[in-house]
Length: 568
Image 1 (tube, rainbow, N blue to C red):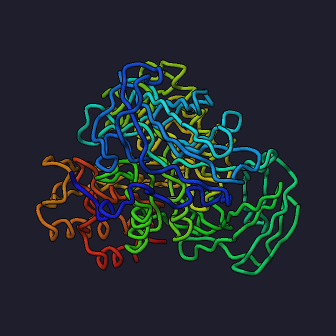
Image 2: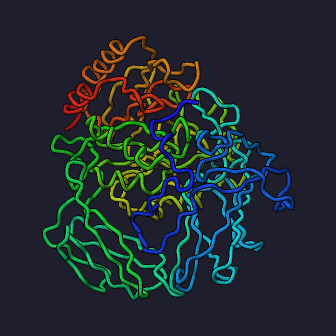
Image 3: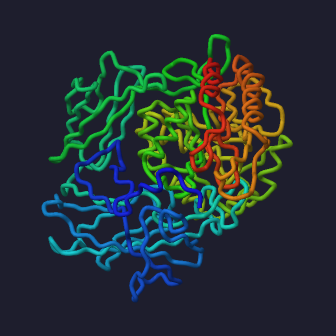
């Protein structure tokens, strides 16, 4: 197995211990990460013979870090069991269990009672346990039953594939983000929607669960607002940007609790520059998005980072190298990852997680000859199952609501390269109704039917030539230059769009690409560039870092020098 430097220092009894929801922090928190019991069966019934195995949560059983290293098949049922005793006075009136993500379908039981279920392998959910808790001081038994169909049904699965290889990666199952308990009063503040109004110097708060909320806003340690108003003026506000990622900290006082959060004053939009070119705007000024494709996979934990420091390390690497954006590709990260982007000043293009049927060549290949297919043809796009389309909308809504408050989110990307695409015009409107404050790249790469805020191109094999239009032109994928680094690869396979034999030849090719093609075309209308990619992932050896994050293939000084020129 290929391990990262963090894997050796994992505390098996308390991995990933940090509070996992940094924009809505309660003082009530018990992490359930660590050793659980598990069983794999062919029946959906809770095993009568118990749970003979041991697994480290939240690492999927397929991963090295879980201690299991076994693939779960679509015919299997994966059961988890964890016992806990609540501390005295922990229960304020209600007790909930939170799951960061469970892939794909989960049913949750407490003391033999079904407390709820969730479908969707990438979005968080919480379930109330109060009614079925054991008496104070007594042991509770939490059981989770998981069913994972991977790519055999239309459920969202991202880039997981049972027959992995090339751009498709090893499947994983079950709990893969943090699990924790929290307690609230009977009536409580469930969530807050925070909307900065940059043009008017305001911030708007929409409350759920109760409207009786006092909000206190801090500029550093200085209190700048203390009110029950839902719309608050921020005098002489500091703006948030990659160059100055200033965050206002907030206390929400409601129902006897103090909940901590933060926000940034910034605005994302599309506009026309002084030369009449359509551009992406940040804070009412043209702004070039210079970024990397970021899959968020780890050699020892797959979708789960071995340590939260590993996630922050990726963000800091991009920032230190001079990039200002990451395109989070076909994955929804733990909320701490977005927090690190907020803190360090990295824009995020957020992809939705794809589902649907098998992706046929008619969808993937035809755009290379300039033909866009009508995505209302569900059969052609392998989206004939209404249940799958409904699940997509549900997870789309969950994703937008989950990340709405993150200052870093600059763009939503609902479809990529036709995978699971359908009704893109309706999906564009659906997102805009949910969130009118971000830009939308509706069909990244191809099958653009007109309902999008940008012209979005993936170009790997043909010359890159920017064509001005009535929308900003974004190069949403390009590059993919590959170099094999001995002793730092997942296997002996080699996948890449252009393959190089040495660090020197890779560096020269990378410099030539930016200096001869990318930088000169910024003045011609290029508005964003997403290089493939941040790290190697399994067979793909086209990362700026190796899969284990131990080797950087192009030195940081060279990257910084190039990136100093990748701007308007």
